[in-house]
Amino acid sequence: MGKQTDAIHGHGFRDQFGAVVPPIYQTAVFENVLKETGEKRLSDRGRDLKYSREENPTVRCLERALAKLEGCEDALCFSSGMAAISTVLLSELRLGDEVLVLEELYGATLQLVEALRKFGIRVSYAYPRTEDVLDALHSGLKLVFVETMTNPTLKVLDVPEIARVCMQEGIPLAVDNTFVSPILYRPLPDGATYVLHSTTKYISGNNSVVGGVLASTDTEKIRGGLWEWRRWLGTVMTPFNAYLTLEGLKTLPLRVKRHSDSALQVAEFLSDHPKVSDVLYPGLPDNEYHEVAKRVFDGGLFGGVVSFRVRGGLDEAYSLMRNLKLVKATPSLGGPETMMTHPLSSSSFSHIPEERRRKLGLTENLLRMAVGLEDVEDIIEDLDRALSQI
Image (cartoon, rainbow, N blue to C red; front, side):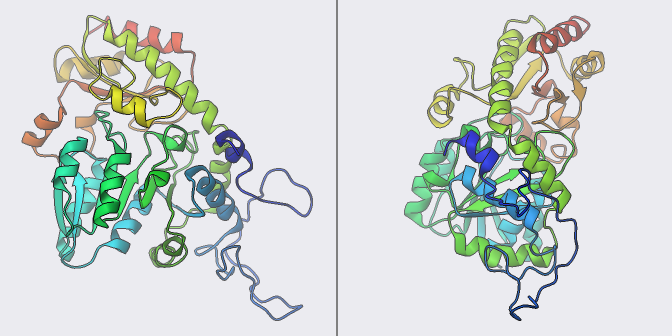
C-alpha cells in the first residue's frame, strides 16, 4: 500500500460493530482472564492485556499504523519524544559504553546524553556533516545518534551512507526523523536500527497532543527489552492522545506536501528580502545541503521548517518576532499554525558553549520558522510587514 493508504488504514483495526474510526479504550485495567476458557487475554503482540501502562488497544492501533509507515513490523508509542529517546539510550548503553552524537541536536537530547555521564557513559561528538560523522565512527561505539535534518540550522545528513557504514561496523544507529517525517524519508529500510519521532510535531499535526514513537526492524527488541523499559519508566502514550494522533496521521502525507511547498515559497521570498542576510533551507538550489537532501528525501520535497538570519543582531531578531501578527512566537513545529522561535533564547540551546555555537552557526540573529498550513500569501505578507518594521 502507499503511504497515504497506510496513514489511513495502517492501524488494522476491525470493530465488531463496524466502526470506521478506532475507539478510545479509556480504561486503566482490563479483565485479564477469559471466563469462558480460563486463558489470559493477550494483545496482538502476545503481551498480557491487563493494564494500560503496558498495553492498550487504542495505542496499539497507532503503533501498527506508524510501523507500516516506517517499513517495519512493530513500534512503541510514548508520552513524549524525549521518553522515546530516553528509552533507546537507557536500553542500549551500559557503564563504560560510548555513544556518538551530533554537536547539533535538539537541546534536550544533548542535555540528556551529558547527564548520562554520571552513570559512567562516555559521550563523543561529531560536527553535523556526513564526512565528520563517518570519520568519528569506530568499532568501540555502542550507539550512534543523529538527526536526519538538524535543529535549528537544517543541516542534512546522508543517513543512508551513515547507516551503511554503521552496519559494516556493527554499531546500532538511532535516527531522530522528527523534522522530516516518514513521508519524506524512512531510515529503517536503509539500515538504521531505530527511528524516532516526536509525534507532537508532524505526525499528529494539530498542536494539541504530546507524544513520541520508536520504531525498529529489530522486532524482538521492540517487543522485548524496549517494551520492558517503557513499562518500567511508565512512559506509554495515553489512549486519548493515541486517538488524537491517529486522527492527525490520516492527513500526514497531504500536510507534509503543503508544509513543504509553502516553506519553499517562504524561503524564496526571504532570500530576496533586503532585511534578511541568510536563509537556511535545503530546498534552495544554492543551499549547501540541497544535493544530499534531493537524493535522500522523497517527492522533491524538503520539509516545512525554514531558518534564516535577519540583518543585525538580537534586537532585530526580537523586533521581528514582536511585529508578527499571524505567525505565532512559539518553539514547536508541524502544526497548522505557522510558528517562529529564537533558538538561542530557548532553554534547549542556551546551555551550548559559546565556541560551539559559533562553529554551528547558532547566532543571535538566527530565527527558526515552522511554516504552517495557512495561505502562503498571508504568511509572506505577515513576514514582509514585520521585516519592514525592523
